[in-house]
Image (cartoon, rainbow over all chains, first blue to last red; front, side, top):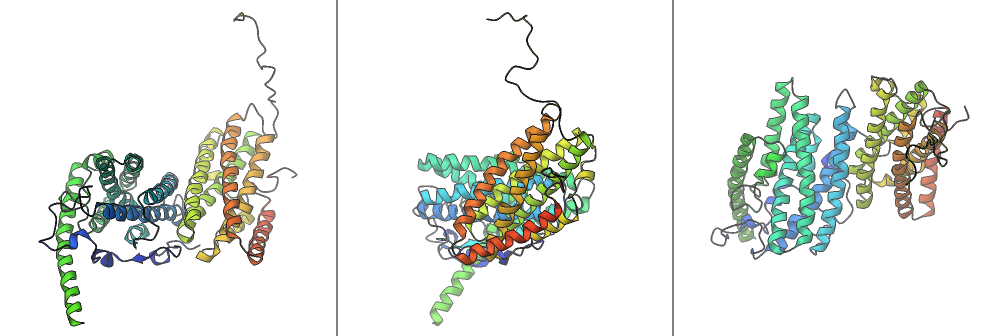
Amino acid sequence: MRKFFPVDSLARDSRFNQITMKQSQADPRSALIATEEKRPKTNRLQPSRADASDAARSLMHGIFVGEIQALEGAGRTCHDFETGTEAPFALKLDMARQAWDEARHVEISVKLSEWMGTEIGQYAENTVLFEAACSTDPVLRLAGVNRALEGLAIDVFTTMKEFGDIAGDPFLEFCEDWMLADEVTHVKMGSDWLRRITENDPERRKKALEFQSVVDKIFSFGGTRSDSQESPIGLARRFRELAGFSDDEVEDIADVSLRALEERKAFARQAQAEAVEQFSAS
Amino acid sequence: MADPYKPRAPFAPWDRRQLPGLFDVEETARRVGNYKWAEMKLFEALGGWVATVPELDVKMRLGTHCYHHAWHAELWHKRLPELREMNPDRLTQPANDAMVQFVAALTEPEAPELTIEKLVGVYRVFIPHFISAYTFHMNNTSEITDAPTIRTLKLALQDEFEDWRDGEMMLQSLIETPEEVDRAAAHQAKLEKLILAAGGIAGPGSIGGN
């Protein structure tokens, strides 16, 4: 088995359909692609939204495939680096623990999807999450996956937990609460290892934080997660603090997310215009 | 209530533990170092394979089992300094070169069509050898002086038995044709020959005899 596994080789059964980030953002079912006149005052995922059921099912399926990729990423970090020379033994133990946690999250999210009336493969799988786990530097992986991706998971689970609470679904709220506890642990793991490994290597730390920033922007899902009510998922500031993010870091992510939202809106307008043009030409 | 000052035997009548054991401190440390190395190779392989198997249930079990073996490696890592080995890395070694060859052959399958080979290597060869080496150690070390090793062996064995059962059931559910039976058997035979040459997880004498 080779070291460093390419994203296009991820093994899936016949139910799964993988797409790129660009395809995902151009999806006409996306709430952010609605025209200005039809756009609701808030896109935040709440039971009062007309499309709440489908949006929640779509998000849960996204969580499900994201957990699969997080499981695969943690597993690969156990395998891809030599113990001692490339990654500390204790870091690999943490990644093995995370693999178990992510496996449980796949189990939980597949059962929740079933509970919500979704079938596996009903929505496409965006593989951008695993791409962050392909770095050849374990510190960059921790920055990209544990701090950026798992940080996003904190925001997503907080939103879903609130959704379950408001919708009167104690089953959903219960499960999200448990997964949220694991994610805070994973983010803290990433924060602690990043500081420990780069303690005497400021250049490597800078590079890792820059990578995290890039991944954070990508994982802002083009504005799906931000403080703005236009984003379906909010920024879970309190849980991020628990996970070891400083106030400045949370503010940076908030800024990046808002910028991503504006870029997404511009992209959506362009994609819609292109689609109309293609339709008219045909 | 009985008189609390009445003399009692230091060992209760139902406590039949014995002082003698087969292994001294040095031999115990050597074996523990081999166990740690082998558990590390196993959890690394399981973690690496998660992304390579298309079967969703197998993918999840490999992730779960990956942690079990990482935890065993951690327990052995912590035991080494208690056995007078202050540099655990020094004894974290394969039993011999044949063991290295076995692990190389075990971890060779990568393609998504080779789930049977991956599972056979782990659940029909490697884990049964862990079970036999751990059982031999547990039943032959001093029940009193080496109680901490016995406790770790028991904890690890609990996982090994459960993981073996999970793996065997996954294999039985995946093998659907006589040709696949042959495939599984051929791969098992290939790996068994390699671990036979190694003498087991801790080399010759893993389960006594030498």
